[in-house]
Image (tube, rainbow, N blue to C red):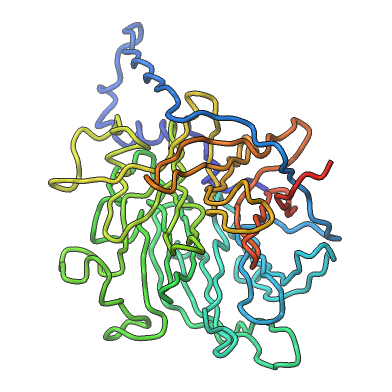
Length: 426
């Protein structure tokens, strides 16, 4: 199975396709023998913060009697069951326990609905349980469909018997949003409830290299944005409500669902359990992978900016008087640090006190896990600690860094395994 395209499709193929599409005629191709200009290599900036190993923490694989095919999300059931539900790209959902028992059971089988969705990021992208799930039994899904190609955000109900563990009821599905998609990659698609009770939805820019149609900056489309909706109400004929304090509700030229904009392919959406701050990892194109602290109404730059720098492929900003917010941290393949960021959580657990207040994240391609140390006074990163480096023979390719109900880190891997970061007692 091919990995998701946030794990990068062939850059050379996409570049060639864009070149053909933009060539007005064959005469635009230089004559044979005429040398093509060689672009100057980008200047590699020095690392902004030091990197150092953090001893005393080890990555341990959890024991299950099966693999979880292309896991993309793990969400806790907000009831007394002690279970979490893992969502897999091809439509299988399992409820499981992370207590070392290896217990798991089916929760929802969506594989028939995902039939034929085999390209890049197609399939399931996320699951989130309503904060009052114990009362209303509602949860929410993010996934893709074809004919036409689109992102679907839907609501579903689970069984409500108090003397049994919940199971999904697919016949209760109610579609909230359908967002047309131009290509089968850069879907984003992670969803999460904030401490305010609203549902947050992270969407990618639509997939074309360099974002040539500037979808991430276009305020009248939902691509390349973080959305915020109220699933408990209705606005007009919409099957959801627009929160009154959304940042653009008074601007007719901006979609009112938009909470923040300027993202390429956000992957890893989480809220700080202590402050409620929204954190988001955004997968870059050729050079930068970034971590953002997302604020209401802020613009994070893509594709006018790429990581902490101005992009080389757009001479002018799409929006007038553009003000952008830099990432909290960015790393680069130019220094050989990684190729695809995977978010991410601000650690607030108790078992690993040396990580308190650090943002834990990983790189899919390199299999490296880091903790970004944040100065509590300034909010700025001061160090990057290596928690794990993949050995060559290890198939570990993290697809998500998340947490159990106690805030302890859990990592999903493309090879179908689940891992914990734990204290090294050796």
